[in-house]
Image (cartoon, rainbow, N blue to C red):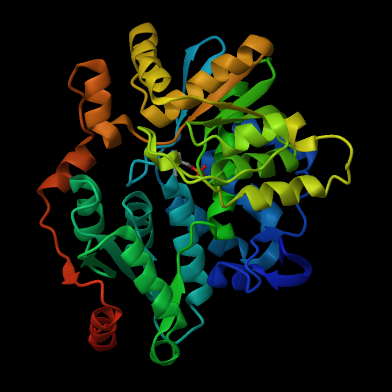
Length: 440
Ligand SMILES: *Cc1c(COP(=O)(O)O)cnc(C)c1O
């Protein structure tokens, strides 16, 4: 497989290089050089394939022979060891539950796949790889559990003390083994500043092999295209004949971009709906042609509070390739809608009362967008990507519904595990002293 940088298409790299580097030197984003349609026989067989079989076929199609079939088979089997159910709540509305992984959010798909891919590529190295991650809460949990016990890889997570939720903190600090949590007496920005400085520290980089588990690593995007196939397959089995659309609650637009990849690989997706909260940069772009990044505003669907979506560069890149300068190709595929917290809360309540379905605030934004879309395109079946388990946002959801909700067993268990974290100050020297002496 070859990939280029969105800033320089002549700059081609291998999958290994793209995954281990994360970002190209020119500050662009890595993109696959070829995204070709899957053969007809794949789509004929799809309804008989399991998620893992589909994963193997789609990933092989995309990456070619960079990983031998047996190794890839083991990799996808380990990465996707949880169910991906599609729950149809009425004739034209289905919910794809992407929260059955260990961190209860869809980011498990990307993190688990990336961890195993890095582990695979790292096998030929003698020295340990140390992944540094700064987290404001969510990503850290998915990365920690994704890399847990990956041979040859150590993970050091920096999080701001007192500024992540108690359960998020437990997700970072209870695993042990190759996962170390550093509790920084400061903000998320302080954590990020330490990580940045570490990558620029020549002496430290001579002593240790450092890498990042960047959210825009191409290894996170590829697996996120897989569940679009899965939803389509489950609708096929249920006898659906309507055109299929996906409503994607979006922040950095990785999930949505992965849906466009699936469409380019031939999955018959009628439209993809960009559903956002008040951070409506992309719906605004789709409606006006103006891309205007802003400071993010805080909402109850806070994993989507992004003012300058990092994957927008990938979307622009995908649509420039169409060689269509006078017509708006992106707008033909993607429809955008945005909603405020008040509407989102009402939607959580409505979905619960009307369908007895418990939806988290992110999924509820997806529901609202789908319903608005279906007023214009009524002859469609919509799949809402439910990106997180409602228990992840328990206070908000209980407030809206005025009722207690049950916490899944694996999350409840975590609350009782003892926390283990190393306290450090915001001073880089403190971090450096620790990591230089730590026995990995
Ligand atoms: C990360 C996240 C999103 C946003 O996904 P993007 O790929 O960044 O658009 C939506 N919902 C939840 C629960 C998330 O954790």
